[in-house]
Image: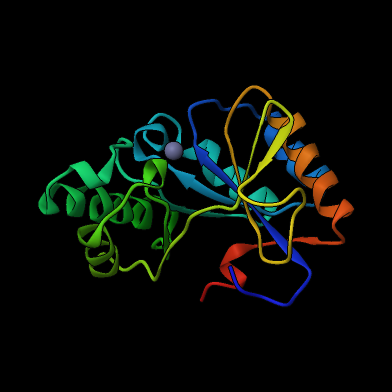
Length: 183
Ligand SMILES: [Zn+2]
């Protein structure tokens, strides 16, 4: 996203793998994150995500009900995937999501319309991805101010968060919370 501040944003998707140690990892790293959660995993253990959010100063956002490729869905189904998730999270977590990340980064005009109707103000993509402790940049070979980094709730959580911290330091950037910039 556009900012002149020396910041980078960590976003963590889906929620399939859950481990109580994840809170310590984020706290030790001093990194707040935006969790784009799929509702199917929230329903398995909403308490886990509530505690993780509260312990780390993070936020919970919309990543649909069950992770479809939205572009291939009807407008009605897209609306259901986005609105029902926001309704559920508002009830479960006491805050209505303001951000949507479409699964696979796949969206069309119906997605944007449904996202706005369901109360989200931004559709969020990413400019670098971390997996298995390694980072891949969409362009270039380092992080830049305003970069949004994607990782997932996976077994390699600590390696992936450590990689984010290292890459941010290398580029002179501070971890920041995306919601503080996308308002
Ligand atoms: Zn996803």
